[in-house]
Length: 80
Image 1: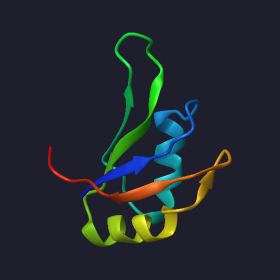
Image 2: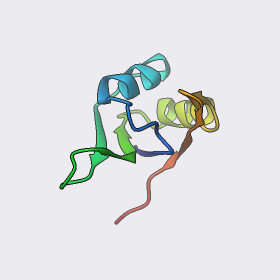
Image 3: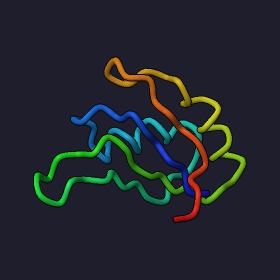
């Protein structure tokens, strides 16, 4: 399942995000979207988890949880 993670602190790294999701299960990939001109995070990203059950547990456990003072918005990503 591909998971959208919004309202990320700008200093969050892909490793930080992977570590936040790891307790819920296997993380296949992590991608934080960055501005192509400045190279700075846009404040959102995507996490891919192979197990739907683990992904749903991660969404339930992390949605609204604070990371560096900002409440995360975590839900199943929608197709482009």
